[in-house]
Image (cartoon, rainbow, N blue to C red; front, side):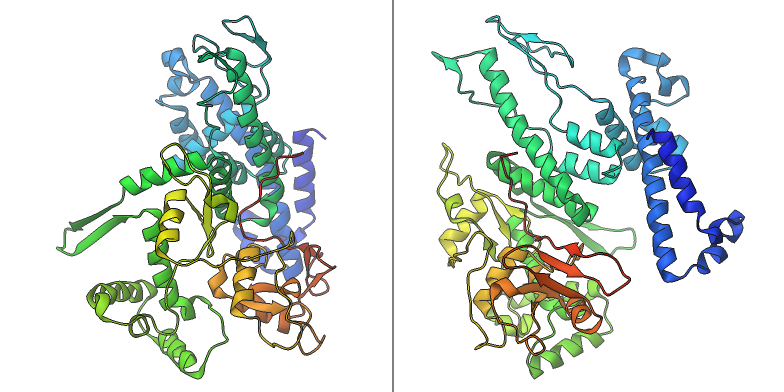
Length: 508
């Protein structure tokens, strides 16, 4: 079906909701007449229509940018209408922010990019569909760009513009090879460069394909974070470079506003940010939906925090100042309560052995909470200063079997669950592993469920109660996928996916 016909069909689908077919000023009253199920269905259909129209607008933004290049001078599409840039033109037409207009232009240009340029021997580039001939007479056919799969998915409506932008920005451009393997007495040939570029871009293409498949299970923010993690995993040398830049940019700057109140701006490096986040999480967990299973003393402290009249921001400020004042003289329990803060890193054992020519660790790891990638230097320092715990898992990530002798999952099992699930397993739930509880998918009492890793999942307190009180069920056939079953009438079963970083599969 052609795109305009597809849009017509989407409008007709939305027109089935007669309650919405009213004068614009009466839309709110009409929408209130929809029952819950029809309101959700109307949101879904309206979203499909918006995304379909957005495809048209994005591509046209790309066309406007293409016709507003610097070499056209004042005859460009944007310039003849009084705008310096195509972004300014799009912003004036659409009324969106400057950042959103820039994103639309960037995506539009990507939508029109159906070929890949390859460097020739003089540094010039070949256009799509043209062969590039090097100094040794070798011709190299120009391939489609590595992100072409994303372009097609967006045009076909399988990916929203925001999702496309998240994957494209998160992965970034593949690096140019610095050490092609096809050399002759130190001379780099065009054939070696082309092959090396092709191999790197193929890895990026596979990464884009796998992120495309995973996109429905992520929010846009998490998809961007996942794309960045994937980039670090497939190019650990770049992860080290990016870490070094962030480390060198770390800073603390104080300033005074016009009322004389002092403030500060902090730019964190990875390790410092992880520690501060852990510190705040440890103290604020009762307010943010942390685990419910605790001692009476912990429960009383949690209630005190929940009832505290201060805002979260004020509590975090007071915690930071108290920590700075206490320094090394206070115990962790005095400052943080029951949960002592700490940063737990998850690293594949083999990732701790590979180093570059400067001796820097090339492997990357991730934080147990939120899964942010950590570059080799951070891992190396942790290996020197803290202990390690080895988790041995099978291909499905199931290390321990405790049967029914133990009612609750052990601390080591929860570490393994955190490594496997990466946080609350419920779709699009952002709760990190430290905010979750271990749930028996075979209920301990009702189903005589076993306290085994392969029959347990991590859920936040809200979703844990949802499964016990509202009829949601999670099943698993052997060691297959975990399947979430909504109550009757609320949708089809959903395959649950781990929140840990994707594992790139280099085979088709």
